[in-house]
Length: 330
Image (tube, rainbow, N blue to C red):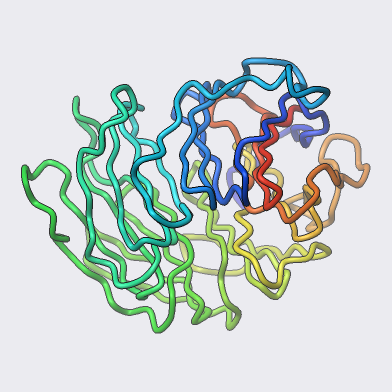
């Protein structure tokens, strides 16, 4: 493997903030690009903006619960499954069970655009393309109808996709973007990489329904998670399998997994409410710093989303089917 740091960072061990964020499952929790704020969304059809470091562990009492900075509640008519924040943090996008993709203004809570081309629920949304003073220029969306769609955010009044990719044979559950490359993971068990610069598509088969894809910061590693309770790490340059990670339980839900920013560990929640960690080099479930097994059972139900703070090493957010969101530190 390439691009590994010389010394490993500890996995998260201490819960520094607990948010009873939603009245139903919280499907997604996303940091802004500065790592200061969180957006969360779930079954209750609301999106909430939080200060990620507004308090120490606030789980002791309801009075200690910090309120959300904003609540966006007038957009979706069904559960919200996907969020992404633009590179300049001025806008975000959301999608879910009502088949709509919305583009929001963070400050004013205004819905700037509504895209309705999909024929089923939206599973993932991502900003892409060149950035400018107006933020990211392209919006990518995937969902139950097995189509990857691209929207040009610079075109005034343009609500139709500028391109559609229909190679998937079943629902697309997840998506990852790095530069000009876009990876999708489908229930058909195939990882597809679209190179927009070259106009090429590469397919890699794992033969299991894919629930999560994450590309490393360097772009050299791709983490793929499936409902066979297996995480796999691939080399993006040639598609070769580098490592597998097992021991967790993920058979029914879309549990999003991640690589740490130092690319030395895999972090993922499972269906037993446990946050798990694996060493990238050995594949063993371990605390990278001191060799002790790392398992935290702090959510009452399935952990649906795990994401690392893009700016603060060792900080991780998890969201769960119990409606809670937790911020962890090393």
